[in-house]
Image (cartoon, rainbow, N blue to C red; front, side):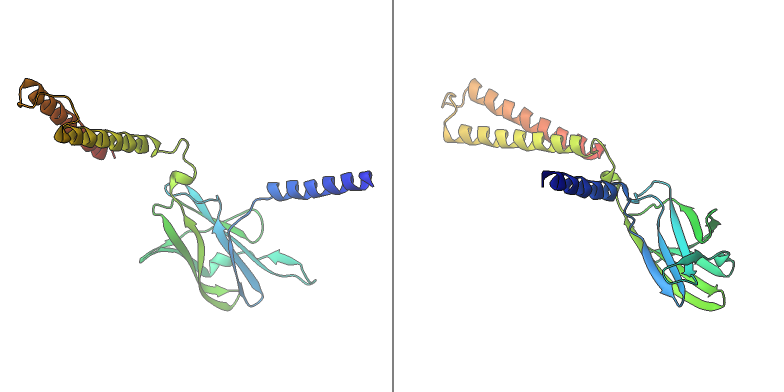
Length: 212
């Protein structure tokens, strides 16, 4: 019985291991009669400003059920256009050594949703479709250490300094701070010190804004 359990655990572990090494691609597949068109990014997750490729896999059903074969020379009569918002650009398509596979190099410059439009004839069949591809993300998904970590620390420090300054002013107004009540030199010095602190905080905020 123990041997059966061990074999079962090993088998489950093997399934999980296989699942972890198989990449998951967020590609979109559409069908035009007997043809299957799959479109997506070559490198995922797609990140703004980093060279990538829009990849195509175009296949047709084989003679036997469940089989397929790659379709060649597709873009001889089909134009491909990449679209973002109201902007579009016709792209050149390169053939992969594998039949039915194609790619077009691109550097995405905006975060958001991109579309691929295909127009023309696929072996005599009219085609006019728009296919969404995975959204482009900011570099934050790959940045290490995070680029905003230093800025976050600066903002926290400024908040703490402002809070401390507010407490000092409140104590001074309420008389909790020990200074002569006749408004003498010690009182003036305390006010001067608080003014210097406030000015330093303002300068720090200006410097932080300029750096960003």
